[in-house]
Length: 399
Figure 1 (cartoon, rainbow, N blue to C red):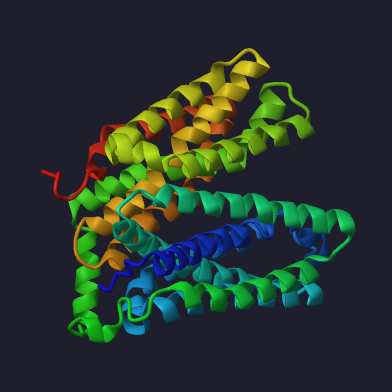
Figure 2 (cartoon, rainbow, N blue to C red):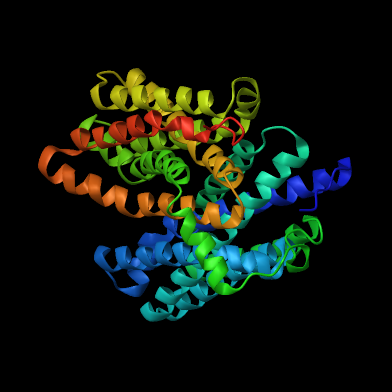
């Protein structure tokens, strides 16, 4: 593996990867604020919208599974640039579909965009881990913070476009153009010849597949995935149910409930941005244990809290709980054995499954117990993640 140790080149590499994280966040938040307009324009109901969004997740999982062979074949620079161009193509198709009001075309667009996001997600985590190793300090939480900032920015753009009367098709087309132009700038910042096929013995497809399959039999890798699953379920549960719970069970107005979610997103982003030095001081395992422990307390405060101050404090602590497990799990997975891209594909798939299945499971429980009681599932999964958080230790320290 080629590392770039001189200051300017390392800085370009780091900022290129950070920018790619931000572009990923902007992408996944592009359509959420425009769902009411999309549903009206396409003349579809919530069930169809749910199926369309499931296509995004399916595409993302496919992208994760394809990331390792593409990275080996194309090298980091071309693979990451190509993944971002695929994202841009998906958003472009989405813009066309919105303009012509075609449900089949927009369904294809969601799958293509999801595949681009999955590919990008895997590759930026591989690159981020390599940047950390070259820099000799913890940077992944801050890079994931850029993803969170991108989500906030993308949501803001969507809300502004809706307020200004910009159609979803125009918005998606504009974002596609920005991401396509940015793809070339990001690729230029990746060092040449990283993970190029010539740099290592070429493997057959069957050998590569066996290497990936072995990851699903690696108990330590699966435990890392469980940590990430708990944190991803906590994040997905908040995104799906926090505002509804605040409005219907804590007596907040719709505007105030939306502010609760803003507090959650800001707390998660700030923890990721400023959490790196804490990891360098006390290590990945203790940082994960500390943040997840706060997450358990935060969920409890939100469910049981009787005052707005306590409930908001619970929201902030809940966000801290989900903030570090995913980025630190990606680093731990990449370091846990050979072929980092394949290993990241395994744990990333577990995380995406949590995001896909978790919110509906919470909804199903809520039908029986009520939504606040159903949110205890998040605390339970946090506890499971806490129990196996030792799996995030460095490989040298691992038993």
